[in-house]
Image 1 (tube, rainbow, N blue to C red):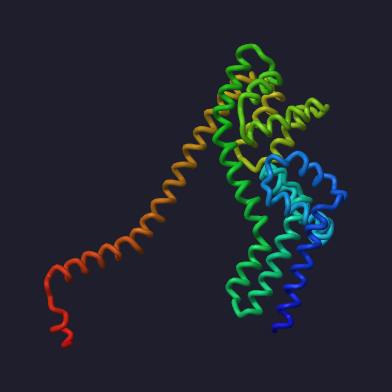
Image 2 (image 1 turned 180 degrees about the vertical axis):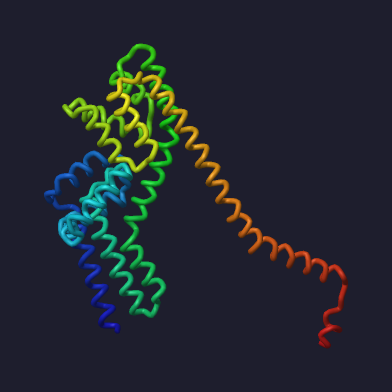
Amino acid sequence: MALLLALVMALGVGGAFAGVRMYRADARLPGDLALALEVGATRTGAVDSVVDRLGMRWAPAVLRLMGPKRVARYRRKIDLAGNPGGLTIDRYAARRAVYGFLGGVGGLVFLMRGNPFVALLLLAFGAFWTEVGIWSAIRIRKDVIERTLPDFLDVLAVVVSAGLGFRQALDRVSSRYEGPWADELRITLRQMDLGMSRRQAFAELRRRNDSEQVAMFVSALQQGEELGAPIVDTLVALAKDMRRTDAQNARRKAARAVPKATMMITTFMVPATMILLAAGLLLGSGVDFGSVTGK
């Protein structure tokens, strides 16, 4: 057992030195990983940057093990998350390699030391930590976009009704906003500047966002363009529909929260209150418990 533990520690020290050497080496990065490190350098934390550089050599191997279908699925998830911190599929694979190695080695060490619970936690960390970050980013980004979109449509309708064309109004209003929705619109405008048709650019916008309200926005624009409907009326009606949908969703969430709150109160608060009341009555009654128990 001691010999195996020493071997694992030696491998860990050797891996650390090799990692530092690769981190400082002038290695050639994969295409989108190099771009992400360059563009996202100011948005990525120091720890993530070090992890990306340590795992970049194993990123192609991880992608091959994942297979094309799984790689496409995770690329879609990263798009839905808005590439948080400059995350790309190569950076995701690099982090999976590093976290998987750390979780596997740490889990093996604690398993040999007779601590299976900590070993299981470390293995779960290595397997799911990167996915937790992506899932959280997807949920937060979707909520922010759906809160921003109705107000954005109202402002866009006012600017269009003032006489600007839709393309110019979209550029003007998006420049006044910050956050994921403004980023998405800038990407869409950039695609149109590079020659992509408006219909295709907005279809890409819908593909990058798993949001019902974004899908409503793109569908309304495309239908209005086909039918020749006034864009201002379309935007105002769409903003009203989105606010109505938000109110309905809020009522549904509140309705689901009531049974949960009732269950928590019934399960924990009511018994705890009864115990406190009974204990207070017993202690305040002056009963000699020694005489009752015979001690």
